[in-house]
Length: 148
Image 1 (spheres, rainbow, N blue to C red):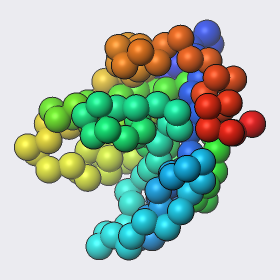
Image 2: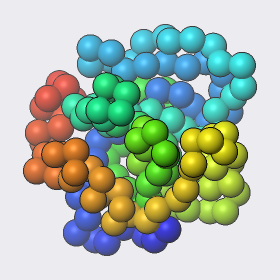
Image 3: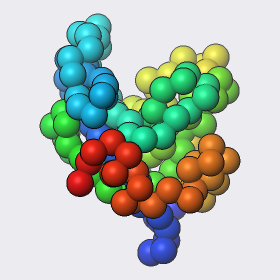
Image 4: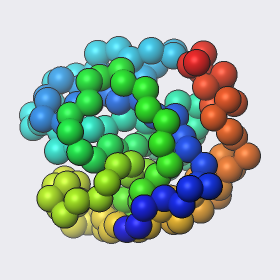
């Protein structure tokens, strides 16, 4: 994986599940609401890109943030650092500095039959463009969900 280029588009994300926690939340109607308690804690910060749609699961595009724990509800604008590609199409856009321990924990989270593999930042942007999201800028994404 590589670092994003300075001109790489940024994406608005919202943390729904904090690294190390079992309590999971979900983005619904412009806010983060309780979802369920998971049997195991999250190995990364997990959330979504509001205003997007992944046809693989008919929900917002999933995102993960590597590094320190981020509180649920944290809104972040960053350029992707990679893509976790899954065989079923329910890919996860990766944000943050790619450190070996974080990437290993992320890959270990998925069973082998999901075919998890790490791709670079360009692959993340290409996939988002294929979903028809490339033309959406930060202002449009934020405005679509009432996020400033």
